[in-house]
Length: 238
Image 1 (cartoon, helix red, strand yellow):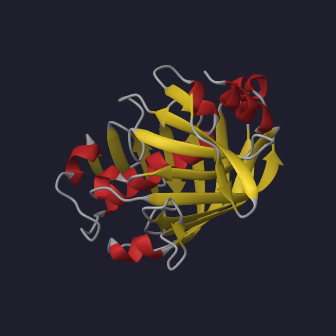
Image 2 (cartoon, rainbow, N blue to C red):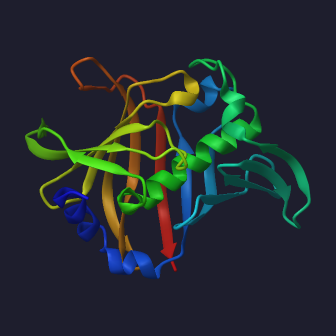
């Protein structure tokens, strides 16, 4: 583990507090251009519940009124409020074989993407200390008059996320400011994910505003279109 990751973990509430918390519940709004591109819709008011030490995320409601979406790497499931299964898919990542940027998603594919993405975002930077992660500090980055430190991360195969290689940018105090990755399940994309408006909930610090843009060959964002917009309105950690 690098000194930069130690700094980031401390800035977001510290490892001891993280170990005391088992789940978070976040009230969120999900928007951006990617949903229509995939034949799906925004989620203007959704409750996201995530286990923090295993990859399990639930969305309420998910798509239809009275429906819950459950994400785990090995299976995605849509069920009713009383637990009756409506749809389920084992090994959901395999269903994206051959997908490109404009390939539509069905509801279980949408659930898989939102599930692993939400889990990644709600557990960063703490998950990067987990078994199998490889971290190395990269070159400094200057943007909008600020100097950010970059952490190059290789994800282990058993942690489902956007891509194996990802880059996290932290400011001088250790707060996350930007997160770069390629979305493998849509054939790859250069995505710059900006986070801001950090707030403390239950002793942990979460960025509550997230905006994803494309970036060009110079690593600079292209602000012509917001691919994904996420706003967390309230988070509880317990």
